[in-house]
Figure 1 (spheres, rainbow, N blue to C red):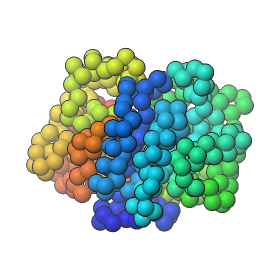
Figure 2 (spheres, rainbow, N blue to C red):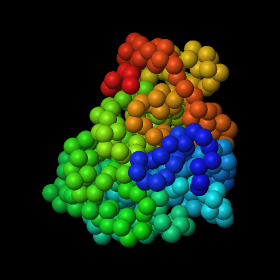
Figure 3 (cartoon, helix red, strand yellow):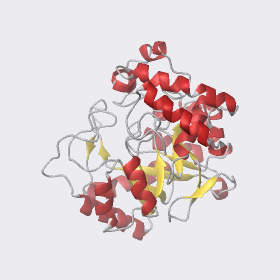
Figure 4 (cartoon, helix red, strand yellow):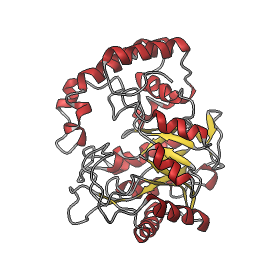
Length: 351
């Protein structure tokens, strides 16, 4: 999709100009798998994706693991028939392998060359496209299971594929034209540096929000290497929308992964205090709390865009204005003070 919205930025050195906000398709992937968000309606999900695109969003982020292939299939249906000039960029990932016989089992972090090549073909088929605009390693290969959302640690199996080996395969896919650009999600600065010695890291995708600020070192690394940065979970899975409450947390569906995550249990009170502190800033800008939370991430030097999800078209309308919202230095100071006062999350409190 050609950039027509003035609120776009070059995505590193990829040659793609992207809107400051991209559509995240994790939440529309449906239930029946370990990290689902509860039941969804496919037709409504497709309508939501299309509404985001007509609202100026020119890229969609997905992954095979979201809904065990279902998210990619939905995107394929949503973009089918769109004229080339109107079609959004499609970004997907590789490296989380699930067991079809046990969809509730944790996927394994695997980046063996043969597996990567099999996955890219499967993604192209589900998406119905002839190349992937950005192909990202979802997690470093450990050869072990991803036990919970945000699991960046864990043991490493002796047969795990070394980063140097799987990053070379990614570079090969780019040279072959299967993918336009390659990136790394959830990798540390040391891992990014090791990959850069083999082939340029076009894009990184770390988690980043006013609650989870721990990826500041990765963002700084990317800025110094002309690497694009798209951050995920800027609303911390709904906590920074201004609509989340303790009652809503208690009533999440049984198959919603958030029910057992610390952000929605032991850390809930602090997180909601921070969300409430964003309301005065939102009122001054005639914006939503969601838009302020997203704009805060976009104010960080080096961040190109933020991934935001929605399950209904009207939810998209609650955050599209974030791309043009400019926080003042006074706003940033006020939010930094609120972060410290609330005790929410970790990492630096200001850009």
